[in-house]
Length: 513
Image (cartoon, rainbow, N blue to C red; front, side, top):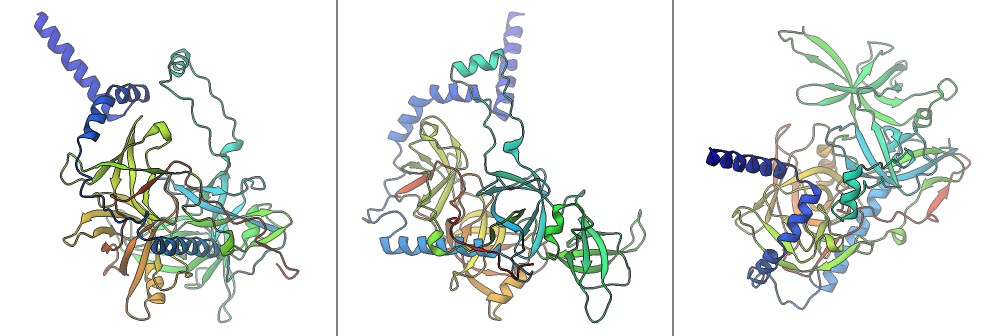
């Protein structure tokens, strides 16, 4: 009987340990980290994996000083092109009485893709309901400013004890420069719109908001169109300021997309039907990096970033020089490394590890004295990317969205897989930059939307071409990726770079609308 009770106790403890391992608990993780310190130190001292990985080149991070300076300049020009891409070009601009505030997409919510988080330079003038645009395209409206929400921390007795022992920490308050935006793709979002007059056809008003999903594409849904006889046309926001007491009126004239019609085949539950929708001019799923929040006020009419205002990706605060203590993983198909610093110096999971301005990998796990790094060639490694024409660093970059690493090919190059989102406009971009060849030589850079990974880190050089069919996948081999055996730096600060200086603006002209 005693043996059976012992076995039951053992199985209970094993089941509890397995349950805890599925979802790590902070205090238990910290105790385990401290208990395993001697084993980790011995492992680092006995790891010979870096003896052949480190090259005695005598050069700094990122290769030769000249190459590093050139890559830093390319990264700064990319940032400048992104900031300028948020400025409207077709819509009459600037708008009288409207002050645009630049915002960088911080994190795209995975649970709710109809919300995005923005980092803004000055959240003071921003109010709920104000319009958000990206270039000439209307994106959505401000839904929440988290720092203005009441923040309450009421720990219980056990939580207070754990905090005194240093095994738990209070909740982190929201960043002061964070803004939550509800996009036009949200099912409850609505905005007044109209079709522009073409070829003498009368204006047609409607309401746009939410999504109309078809088999091979996604459109913005159209509600209550004034006429069913219009089949084509450019759809723009139309909210009369005198009739509607809403911040959407400041976005009147901004574009939504092109009106489209399609026939949906009959199914067992629904008959054959005609669908009307707006083909968006923006990839809402993966194509957002930089936007403008249209606030009311006097002063700046438009943002005019200059090269002298751009703070380089390595000049921003929050970088620390580190050494890769070891390379390799227990799983032979994985590609990871181990840093000799961890949470003791502010290294957190998700932090970028770089060789110059080239991304080497991201911290997958951090403990008190070290951190595990998933390298760029680790199968399954995910990164948000931008494509910039190699011969035109001032061109507006193409937002690719998420790339997934497939490891290294036979020539030692990192290969990544890219599956364009349903709303991607990559075909038009490639046609514009390929000069009829259907292929563009590009530099791939990190984009926005990754915590502790700043925008503008180099992934490598490759050739970009359109996948053969909708929903197809493109495999790209990268040249010039970061070297994990070089002198490295790890990100210990936030992911936001400094925005353009306040003096680099142009006041609204007298002719502004």
